[in-house]
Image 1 (cartoon, rainbow, N blue to C red):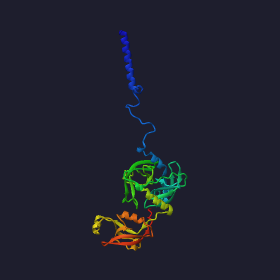
Image 2 (cartoon, rainbow, N blue to C red; image 1 turned 90 degrees about the horizontal axis):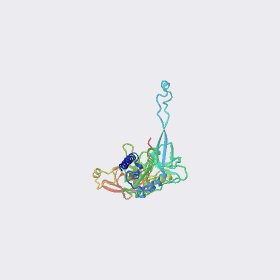
Image 3 (cartoon, rainbow, N blue to C red; image 1 turned 30 degrees about the vertical axis):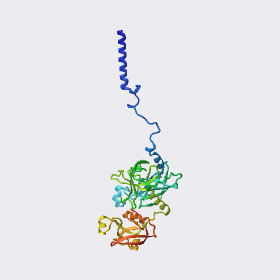
Length: 381
């Protein structure tokens, strides 16, 4: 009996020792231990996200229409003043002859028509000698500039390729603050990227970015290289052309601006039809009405604009407008501020007459002015 008990004790000791070693060194071999230290519920493969929490359908719809734009231009190098000096050439040769160099940059664009028209920012292709467009499907093509509008920072390109995936235009005028927005572009040249945010604000102006401003503000990350790319809604429809960011360090800070698709469409159609955008103009210098000015001119409200200057011989001068007048209405539509006045005048047809209500010496009067054609902005060097 004592011998059997000894054998049992030795067997139990060896078994416990083996169990300890296996539990310590190879716990996954134990039947009660799985591959996880806690029991979890795992969703079936292929059902990673529900439609209500994923915007992959919108991204999949819009991404093929967004292209990468690569531009290059020749930059002349200043001529070295010592180039013809024999002593200088003896030691340095022709290394400082001032040969021109080429600078390259990148941006994004949106295919808006199967005929090959692409919308982008004017500053993306400004002064470019060569433009190459790279599609999401790997195809590449040289592009030509159909026309540009510096006042809205928009440009239209044309490529000659077949079976182009044109984007679907949405209704930017129906966008509301809080709507989901996706920004698609080529930031920093890393490749096509989609970022998500919301519409943060509408009708942003007085930013000093463009002459005509009516931006959609979004917190979807927009970085250098995104310019000219698409801002789309939750259904993948175009609502804006990404144009600018507010940044102190060159990166996204959650404040980006896009040109509404409705405005971009109007500009594009005029560029394709006429080669440029035709806008109304009367030739005045204006100033917004401040509370101090309103008190000085004894105005009841701060709406309207002060005519600070009049171009001699221009439409306003010929129509009788004088410096110091307060412009109150255009064709019976009240003028709220300088931006509103600029937008109203630009929308008028040149050579057509417009009725302008002004206040002069606390007396209101109606003037009839023949609208002129807005001059092209001077090109920066």
